[in-house]
Image 1 (tube, one colour):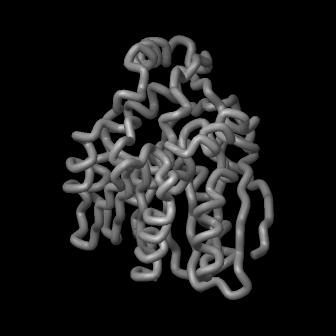
Image 2 (tube, one colour; image 1 turned 120 degrees about the vertical axis):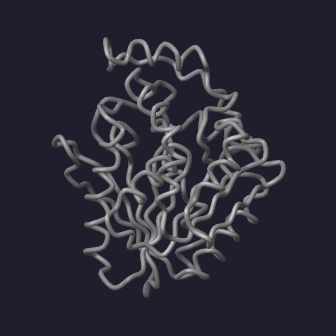
Amino acid sequence: MKNQENYFDGINETKIYYQTWTPDSPKGLILVIHGYGEHSGRYMNVVDTLVPDGYTVWALDNRGHGKSEGRRCHVNRFTDFLEDVQIFEKIARGAHPKLPVHVLGHSMGSLIANHYVSSREAQNYKSLTLSGTGAAPGPAINAILVLISNILSAIVPRLSLASGLDPNFISYDQKVVEAYVNDPLVENKITTRLGSEMMASLPKMIPAAAKLEIPTMMQIGSEDESFHPDSWDKLFAAIGVEDKVFKKYEGCRHEVYNEIKKEVPLGDLKEWLNKHN
């Protein structure tokens, strides 16, 4: 496995960090889009599962996250994320022009991935995987913070507020939680504009899913409190293709790939990709 790090010029002259993991003879290309407050380096369980199986994994740090430039956990418009991914995809395809392409988005990254893929004029992807996803905020999301963000976004869009998230929401694996808490690249604040933009993108998840034309899998922990459980079935039902799968993992929280029972969702991910590669 060969790991490389680099930057590309995102929109608004923002340097966006990305890294790649590549086997000797790759058979497919996976584009990974991470969630709010985290970064690409937290997907090593995915990397360690897929790269030995022949996939090259490309993961970026969203603007304002990880090693990318930009005010921490801030975005001017939600579509800025999508425009960065478009540039990222072009670079990845240029490096591997003959490989089939798959997209994997987790949490906020699932919002980005769903909106991005569904907005493409040609959805030239073999599959889409949405992890820790939904179409409405769950009990882990601070309702007061949502209200404040919506009110202040237009007035003080760059104002940073504490996210109020309990780090235990990600996993029952305490080693994962401790690593998350002690990770200097993980953020626990959010600007009013990013909070407002994410909330505005949530109800649009369902009409976006209806435009999907590629095989799509949802992977959800049964005890994930980031998105409202009622929205899971609604989102899945809206996906506009027959080749779709909804995997719910009992006793798992938000990050199914980082759970105590991670082998099952990781195995399902690998099987799904191999079936559609």
